[in-house]
Length: 207
Ligand SMILES: [Mg+2]
Image 1 (cartoon, rainbow, N blue to C red):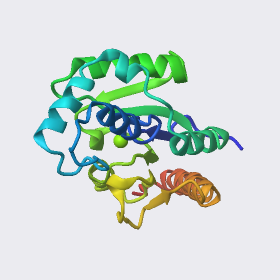
Image 2: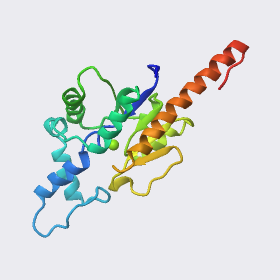
Image 3: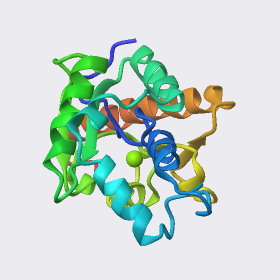
């Protein structure tokens, strides 16, 4: 199948390709003191845990050495197999330059230096046919102006219960469904492209 270079699939890092949540919970657990309640989610973190999380995340090495998250890599392999052009789309924390550096080192190590990367404060601005992202807010923001956009969401505790008609959730058991959605998105892209070409021959524009 011939695939246009414009068939961009955007991949988030934390909670998608990197096991950010799992590693942070594990490191917080190591710092827990006797009698403190166990932390199982990042919602409503107590102040002391938030401070510890900030200290952990101040390290470039912490970001650079995050373990891979299987869910995201499953989706990545399918998208690569279908011929999507893969681009990394990740949020740069406002006040943490270590994260920006560490993320780039992680990408170099795990995906190679040649992959395209956008580190942004606003994912909604970035072009793609598909966004793979675990965070509901970013997904909604990105889909808002993209009625043909496809979202794929690796499931985790933070996005439990999220649904959107354009989003396929992936929990590790339904990769065939994800593949189908990614393929359909390419079929749609091709038919829109054909319609546009015919439209321009007839002298009007298909929107
Ligand atoms: Mg994420």
